[in-house]
Amino acid sequence: MLKSKYNNIAIYVSAFFIIALVLFAILRDTSDAITLRDAQKLLENHSVTKVIATKEYVYLKTRKGLYKIASSQVSPKMFVDYEVEIENGQSSLLYLLVLILMLGVGSFMFRWYQKNKMLIHASNPLDSTAPISSNEPIQAIRPNVSFDDIGGIGEVKIELSEIIDFMKNPKRYRNFGARMPRGVLLVGPPGVGKTMIAKAVAKEADVPFFYQSGASFVQIYVGMGAKRVHDLFTAAKKNAPAIIFIDEIDAVGKKRDGNRNDEREATLNQLLTEMDGFEESSDIIVIAATNKIDVLDNALLRAGRFDRRIFVDLPTKHERASIISKYLASIPNETDINALANMTVGFNGASLAALVNEAALLSLRQNTARVTMEHFYQVKDKVMFGKRKLLILNEEQKAHRVCYQAGKAVAATVFDIDFEKLLLSNETMTPPVTTPLLKHEIESRIKMLLAGVAACELKYNEHSSSAKVDLDEAKQAIKEMIEDFGMGETLFASKEQEDSILNKLYLETRETLSSLNAVLDYVEGILFERESITKNEIIRKLDGVL
Image (cartoon, rainbow, N blue to C red):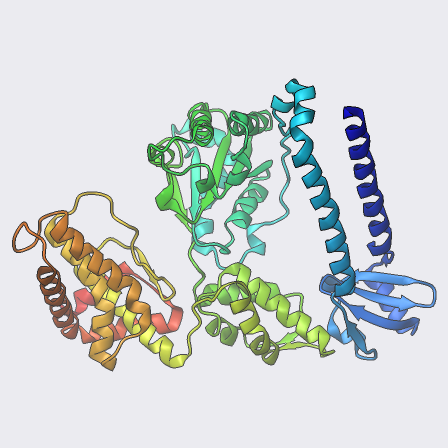
């Protein structure tokens, strides 16, 4: 009986692979890849009978065969004499049939396994408990991305130049008695290019680059995550000097809150141990990336581990212009870079890349020789809402946003709230504070949160719905002041006290801003021009007014 079961599963597996081979033969791409020069010759000799464009390739059909060239290598003007057909690959019906067939086979095999797994396991109990581990060796790569390929990261590049110099000249620092940080944490929202920046550091320093995502350490079997960490650091030490990059480190480095997760904690402990085990002469630097620094375990952030943090923000207008210029460098276009930068408030680097690519594909589909502003206007909504809704503002909304952010920036400076730079696209101005605060310090933070609403009410007699985030945070801070910290008129909490304090702080904030109209106008002018302003710039203006 058992032998028959094994014969059946062998038949099913064989059938599955036969079907897969048949599908591969049907669906595989039989065209030959050619160079740009070969493509130009075929077009000039009028040997091409049909031109078919897909997202990745342009196919040239001739009487002798079918050829393909990458879409990124051609320009629309090459096909002005041809009618270009746009295709999305094989027919949807064929793919649907393939999917149904594969799912059917997989579902049947899964049901058979579920029905008979106890019998199979009983026949060989050692196999049922043997862990299946990945023995894939960890390999280093040599990145081909340099800082010249990345636009809009001037300040980040300056921060990392010291790391690059250390990797090139470690003796210079050791002889001087200086120690480079063991870990560098890149903090920023998704899509701003943290991984590309890490690769560029390795490229500029000319050292091996070991990449792992935090999720790759999260294993089903106990001990495998910690082993993967150990293998990673061992491989890097053998290839020193080297850079280890851990993307989305929050997947493995979350705070330990008392809820047991032995595997994750063992992996985190192994990571901490490996970083502590660095020798001064190891010439290895760990770079990690996260967009959730607030969830990281404090042990990761202490001195000697990730003791240097670099914040990678959404690009400003000038930075967006720089990024767009790089992406358009190899694409024929008639565009206004500054206008494109103005219409992409809130876009990250990845969104800008997608925008330029979609505009180029649209130009190719329409058989136009160059990408124009009209192409960008047509694909902007597709890029915005295809992934997630980004902060895109019309002129009136932008004016209110500028006023709102200017009010927050001036209030934060007047009330001495710690910040370095404010961006027009920032939803929050300062990170959460975990250290104990005095009552007047909490009130100052609440005034900063209310300042945007106060500034808009003073100038426009209304404010936008985007104030919800700040208002919720202000209300929560007041609630904690009264209920948790006993900072109300009495030690007993009440809704009346919350309303009274909120109204009092709002009126004080409004009165402060109303006396600083000149400073507010100055900050608004700067934000309109470059969409960012530093605290030092506001301080200098305040010193000239007060």
